[in-house]
Length: 162
Image (cartoon, rainbow, N blue to C red; front, side):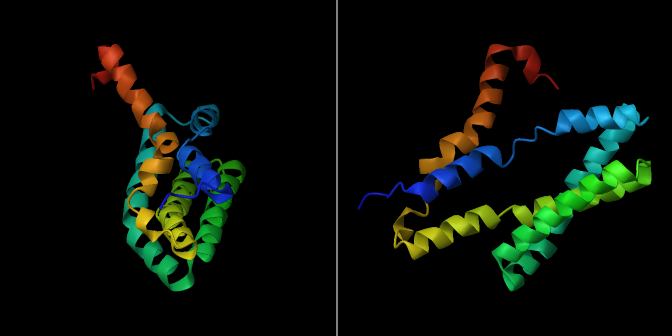
């Protein structure tokens, strides 16, 4: 049985490619510099975001399991939007740290939901035998960023140094 590449497949592929591209990060760094944060403070903010994402994975996963994936995605978008509103209206460091925790909450709600939606789609279309191969089928777009970094590090060894 062959896999059906319908419109939803291309949506999943596009999302897989675009979901972790963070085009806003250079601009938020510039914004933080403009409001007077040092590079150390900006680094600490990014660390707060990443550490908070890790610690929020289990609680947000429990909420997603009990409330559903759609509600989880809505919470994710609400947390993202709220974090950027806080960044804009409250340009103090402590507010930025709180906004980073809100952003991490959005990330934690978002992660895993995409895979769960793909598995649900495969179940509804009767294609569950493709669940292990689906990442390979629509993964090239999702993994292209990692491949680009690997190629750059191989061709320019200075990029591979810590």
